[in-house]
Image 1 (cartoon, rainbow, N blue to C red):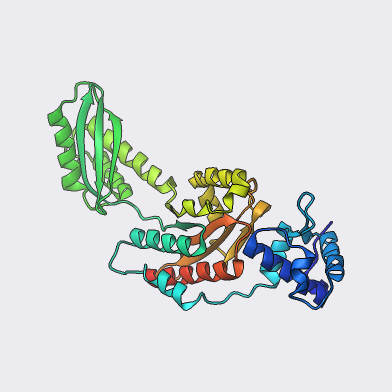
Image 2 (cartoon, rainbow, N blue to C red):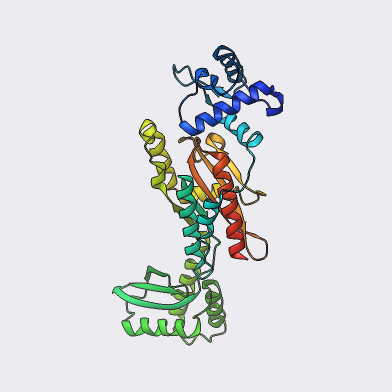
Length: 345
C-alpha cells in the first residue's frame, strides 16, 4: 500500500481527505462519514466510499474497530506538503513572540523567552538550539580538598561558574594553589579557554611561564579538557514540557510518557535539530520520519535562524504530538526564526 501525490487525487477525494485531516487535528478522534455529511453535499454512503479509497491509497486508516478514520503518517505528510499554505501568525501571536526579543538582555535569556512564548502559543514543548559561544576566562581559583585533589572554580566573563575536581601533587599546599590562580588571573584573564591554553603552552615551550613546570602543565591540560567539553556540549533550551500533558493525554499516557523520556536526551534532540540547519524555512518531521520520536509518534517543526553575517547559528522549533494544528504552528515557528534572525543582526 503506497501513497500517491496529492495531484493524483480527484477533487472529491482531496476535499474529503482535507476535511478528515482537519477534523482529526482539531478534535483528536476518528472521523466518521456522518460527521462530514453536514459539511459537504454528499451522502454518508458516498463519503464512506471515498474514505475507503483513501484508506486503500495509504492516506487514512481506522484504528481498532472504530468506524471513523484518522490520517496515517503518510497522509499527514501529504497534507502538510500539499494542502497547507504557510502564512503569518495572527497579530496577537506575532506580538507575543516579538515581545520576547529585547536587545538589551543576554542572547541566551532572549532565546529562552522566545522558546517559552512559542511553547505557550503552540501548546507544545519549545526548543532552541543556541549558537555556541566560547567561554572567556574571568577568574580561576582553587580549594584544597585532600592530598592529591583540589576543587577548581572557573568563572566566565558572562558570569557563569563551573566547578571541577582536579588532581594535584600530594605536597601542594594552599599557597602553591593561590600562586597558580594568581598567575592564571593575571596573565590569561579575558581569553577563551583555547587561547589561554595556547598562550600557556607557548610560555612553557619558551620557559617563560614563571610557574612551576608541573603546575603549568596541569593548568594547560585542564584548560584543554575544559575547552573540549564546552565544544562538545549541546547548547539546547527546552521549555514547556508540561504542555504535552493536557486533558486528552489520559487517553494516550504511554505515548506522552515516551515523549517526555525522549525529551531528556538532549544530545539526540540536537542531532535531530541539526537536520533542519540547511532548510530554507521550516522543516517538519512527522512520527517515524525521525528515529528519535518514532516510539512516541511525535512531530517536530523546526526552522533555522541566522547571525549578523547571514550564517545559520541555531535552530528553533516545537515538539508535540502528530495531531498538531500544522497550519497554525508552522507559521509561528517560521516567524520566530525570522524574529531571532533580526535579533542576531
